[in-house]
Length: 333
Ligand code: AMP
Ligand code: MG
Image (cartoon, rainbow, N blue to C red; front, side, top):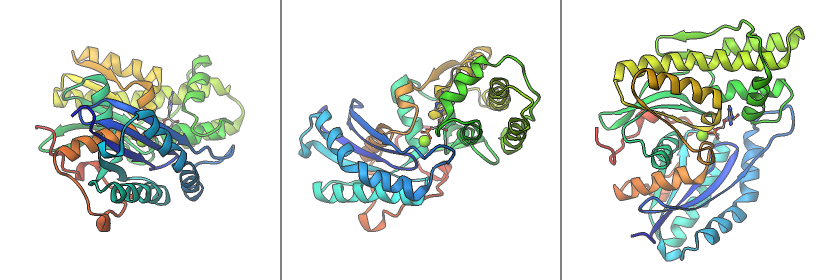
């Protein structure tokens, strides 16, 4: 069983990734190329898709070589079916369809956010956590119940990654700007008043973004202080909603996943909440926090073992696919 593996293709946004993961959860390879937009601009879907088309052959070859696996031991090909940017998703889907039909193996559709969650669980050893998933495409607080990942709280407008990247771009950093804004925020000392919006268990970040951008343009405040204040306001709102959900669900594990999970200050805040509620705290390892093929290959393994697959004719991408719409046969309620 150790030798047999699933090949996963990730292509929802800026990253084109290919990974090979064995049926017992060993990550044999995880290769990626990340599209970087020119300074001052965000992701352009068509340009990102062109990047994926160009890099796909090399990334695929590297992933197969690194895994040292024979084609006959690849028993399934998984792909990010959604949600994400249409042109990017279609590029990855085309690669995956071609591979699955060439290898004569099942094609497995994977929901990108569930990929983040499952890979975070595999790499941390969490069992039944409350998950705070924060990335470029997602900001939600989810727990497993009744056969699905249920959304207990989410953003009502833009995601946390989007907030940070849009602010970072205007502040003069390349996209994605999470780590640059984090480094800037570390140098900040003064908290500048910014609006913090919580609605029930949900957060809203667009007002915060507008206020931060206005202050940035106003030129009256130090950028480090603004970056610091933006992080504090955004993370406090999220931490407060996460605490409400943790108290309500009484989960004894809290897991931070997605690209923004790399942020130390966010980790610190959520850890404090977990401790307060006697829950164990887990963070996805940095190398697997951002988009990667491994999240798709591993979720592909779980799905493959439960006979989840899609015919090539019906394997259309789903740019808007909610994670609470996806049945999860491999988890017990
Ligand atoms: P993903 O969509 O999962 O690949 O995550 C990408 C997002 O994570 C982007 O919005 C990045 O700016 C963000 N990100 C990466 N590292 C950090 C960090 N250290 N602090 C905050 N956000 C980060
Ligand atoms: Mg992602």
